[in-house]
Image 1 (cartoon, helix red, strand yellow):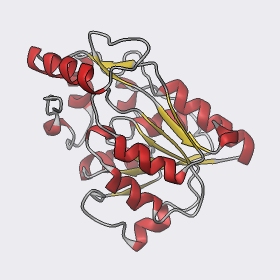
Image 2 (spheres, one colour):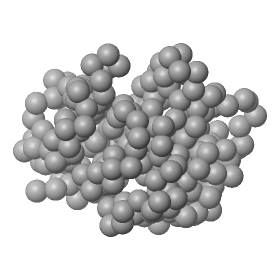
Image 3 (cartoon, one colour):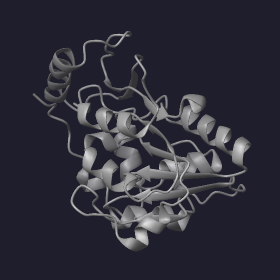
Length: 242
């Protein structure tokens, strides 16, 4: 059984993220933000070691994670304005199937380059493959609802470095194939037993579906399940950088 999840496709491809932020704000999306500190700490760690950091953001949407990694701008209405502060030495490559969202992220400076491909269905083009070279970190915040091992296999087939990986799957997702793949590519794969609320439920059907699927598929989390749609964290990499 899989969760009957609310479909927000109509707000993913607008010219600006205003509707996205308002609609999901009504559902307390990323409040508190489970991405912010984890992402910034990892970027800071890489910058201290190398002087710079290169991030690949899977399903980057309007570049919200890029705004964090480059400018320390939290998710929300502040992302509706161009940043006035200087960017950290962090390069972000955004992947998404929404052309409008990628265009917005580029124009705002939240990402430095984009890959407009559906990597579930297509292999990485030669031009896009070059964009992935030298990556230090691959992230997927909301992407686990939409991708499978195919997307990761496409990315890892063209990278020429040993990036860390951080992802936040929804607690109901069956990601056994992705975990097996990450274990093939990384020395250590750490699955955090804590869970983090992503948003409140959009309706009673979604809530009941989530709770039933959670109890069937992922009963091992130490904190139990909040009365919210929750995620947990996966971190993969070398033993010395986890």
